[in-house]
Image 1 (tube, rainbow, N blue to C red):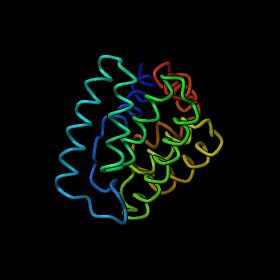
Image 2 (cartoon, one colour):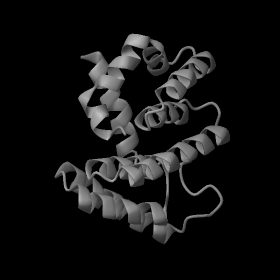
Image 3 (cartoon, helix red, strand yellow):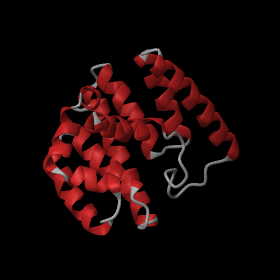
Length: 171
């Protein structure tokens, strides 16, 4: 189903976009050593996620965001915390992800991905009205983007929220 695929692509793109350029510490330069260690930890965390070892993944992701924080890793950390039943920790991680996506959008206003990230994280936080409002704003800003057009369709947006993969990660 196209809707399910869209939700999985949105959440998967966020959760698997380890150490994406433009999503790192906004004010601090990350050393090459820290970047390499974070990449290794993120890879190990992805392996733990594949095995559904949420506690292991959570620990690795927490270490990763200390070394080289970025929106995608914060989302993955939030997701692992949701699965461990740590809703307060998940909320904190998702809020960090939202701030990182906002910062990234401010730096490069021509890229749609940070906006899509914000839409998704707002929905994961249970702020569906804010997420819908942002969809409308982004649809005006990026009228030709197929991903935005898809989310702007109320039926598709509701299907994303109802998707089991999305709901597993949502608060």
